[in-house]
Image 1 (cartoon, rainbow, N blue to C red):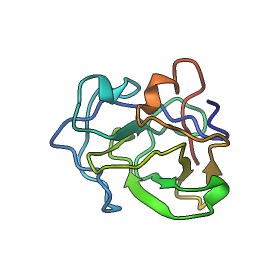
Image 2 (cartoon, rainbow, N blue to C red):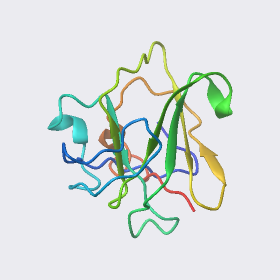
Image 3 (cartoon, one colour):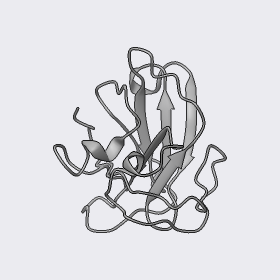
Image 4 (tube, helix red, strand yellow):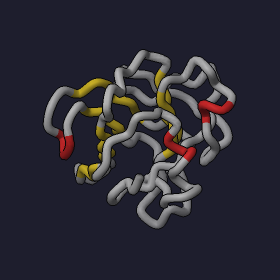
Length: 136
């Protein structure tokens, strides 16, 4: 799955780091770029966001999970990347036959993933078989 204009690398987050669906970034987490779901069984979706050059983590990015492509449909979750670029939620997400993702940085530019996802393990692909998630 290619994440257009986004290079979302999942980061394994610490349980005490809160980037849940409240739109506020808290603290920092660990293992940026790793598949969070491989250790954190309570997470339903998790990952990492990088700067445009993909050289450092991006704090404060808004990651939205949406029911239809290009921002159409219902917003199912809004997450904010923490001090180490990581985001996660333990809230249930109904992936069904697929949901879509967008990321927005402080510039206000929104980037959309062009294909649907059916798993919340973002870094199982991003930073591994596809590019990292990024924003500006």
